[in-house]
Length: 96
Ligand code: SF4
Ligand code: SF4
Image 1 (cartoon, rainbow, N blue to C red):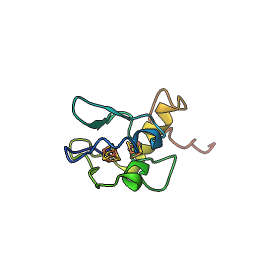
Image 2 (image 1 turned 120 degrees about the horizontal axis):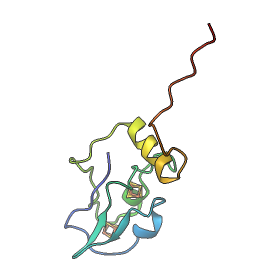
Image 3 (image 1 turned 135 degrees about the horizontal axis):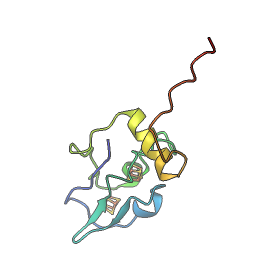
Image 4 (image 1 turned 180 degrees about the vertical axis):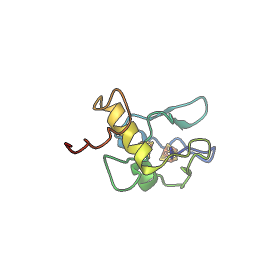
């Protein structure tokens, strides 16, 4: 799942530089997370870095962007340009 920032955000600026995917940016009133860039930090860190640093705990899961760990890893690879085509390549079939 991607995460999201709620209107409890106090615009303290600490999460934005912590995001390895540059998914966080200033919105109209407070910071926002681009769902297509947020991997929940999968591929980079064990825990979401923005959640770790947020002083007001205003970064929950975005219910509109529910994704599995595999989908998040695929997104991570696509963001890095490692996987431009199919999601996970199927394992090679053994030679008959
Ligand atoms: Fe960025 Fe990770 Fe937070 Fe998603 S969970 S916005 S990838 S820091
Ligand atoms: Fe807002 Fe939390 Fe990010 Fe600070 S760390 S800008 S309060 S979301």
